[in-house]
Length: 363
Image (tube, rainbow, N blue to C red; front, side, top):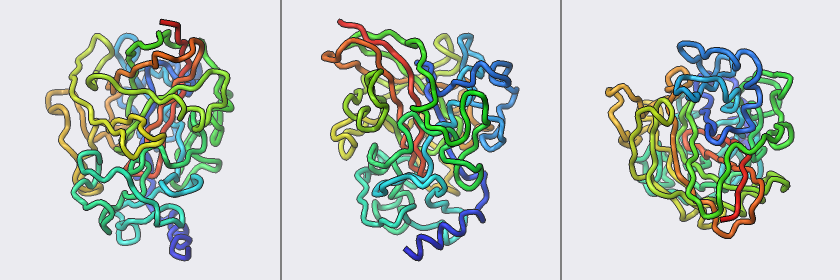
């Protein structure tokens, strides 16, 4: 515990540009984009989207015309910070290892005083950073990251927390531009108003969903459902995890734009809830100097369609979507639901979340 407290004491000494990843669902449109009706998000997207550390709150996504749009508001700033496997709660302020920041950070450690937690994702083919390290070895820096036991790490809120932590801004938590709709530290499930259904699906149907990266921290994600009138908690969402079907797709510029399809890397063992289906984030960081060996990208970025890196909003592609298809359960009760998306990062102790309103009809 003494070592743990000493580590917490030096957090402020580490540079902030290494802090966080960002991402959010695009389709169906999420509640988290509540600020979409306000300036600057209801206006044109800057020609070069700013860094996620710039205090501007930009989360550009492809609009209906395939061009960058601010329609997602600040949706990519809803997450839970300082979360790790084996911990009872997120702390909001810590981050985990940063291997290129010296001996204090270039080592395996947990963000809570629990070093007995066991990773369930050990296969290098299922990992996204530092994949050459032996699972559990001293140089397996990201052993306690959320992705290393998908779905088991705690969160602040299942729809994310604005800025990832309570006030004030700073440290390893993210920023959030306070508006009349939401402010830093607000719990998404409590403050984000319900929307009209953003998709109408049928029981048993295979449907398209998509999300975007603003800053990439590897790991993987899942989709799940909760009844509209139920508490939007992990306990509720864990009752209806959705299975992925078919290939993944990277798509630039909307449905009429350029796309490539490929076999996704799926995980069903060692997940929470047991047997739930997760998929590896298909965009590799491949910044070996910081995070070690990654994995080959699914395209050649020199073709004009980048599909690796994206370690910050300023280097991400604002019109790139990660597209998946998921199956709606055949025995689900028709009615209104909330689609939950949970991205468990590997290179940081952070979990991104989005919540979208949908309606499911009888087959």
